[in-house]
Amino acid sequence: MKKYILPLLVLAAIFAVSCQQDLLSEESVIKDSTVEMNDFDYWLEANFLKPYNIEFKYRFSMDESDKGFWNVPADIDAAIIYAHLVKYLCVDTYDEIAGIDFTRGYFPKMFFLVGTWEYRNNGTFVLGTAEAGKKIMLSGVNELPLGLAYYANDPDAMAEYLSHYYIKTIHHEFTHILNQTKTYPESFGTITSNTYVGDACFSTDKYWRGRGYITDYAQSEHREDFAELVSEYITHDQAWWDEQIAAAHAETTNVRQSDPDAPDGGEIITSKIEIVIAYMQDSWGIDLNELRDILLRRFKDVTTGRVDLNNIDL
Image 1: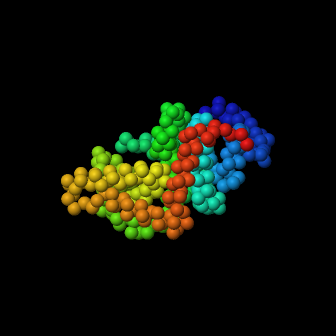
Image 2: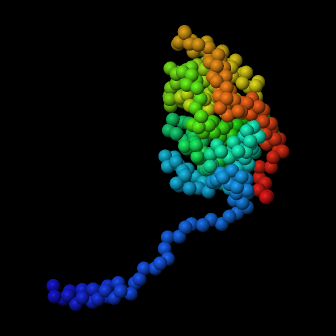
Image 3: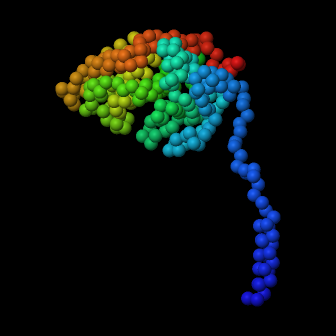
């Protein structure tokens, strides 16, 4: 054991000297990450951040992502297109119908983009989510340019594609924010209170309209039912809506095969949309039919090429 004493003493002396000489620096070794602003960043600052205090976040962030899904970053070219769509078909639409102070006051303060869809294990996928009225996550961004190219020669089909996969989602989630601020009448939730099915709505049952729901997802709960009615109503014209009501009347026959006393699905949807229209007018001073007219006009501007979705010049 003696042969180890001298080396240990030498090591202790070196350590003591080292401790005396090594002083802690006053400058932190932890540095804040910085990202150099590009032209798109400046465009977002001018069109979202400064006028509305809205952060449009397209760079990937693990903190903002839902860690329950496999996510990929949004491509910048796709993000530029999506930013234009959000601005023209959502933010500017509410500016026109209700004024910029309304939009500043109630629109979420962050949009966060994800490149791919968020796939569930039941075969469905998430188009978007809202968090506490402050943030809307939008997925499937990288698919957007492909869809626009595919429907380039069919404006009506392009409008339906944009509505179904992208724009309807934002209006749906914004409806949740409005509902969290001012609640809608409890009577709405009682109309079909005994037929909401939660996640089981993703099933082989294809007669949801016959049971009084405008979409299959509307069957999940009354909150989603309300938001689906708003978003579907304002993103389609009256002819489309009339077709849905007619289909609901017809599908009621199928529903009554297992439930002979089931009420008429078309009448149920009509009673629900009347409550929705009254809520938007009474609570927010927004005429839902006027909002629909504005949005459909703006959709036409996009699908006919009047709006340049790639221009980020200031």
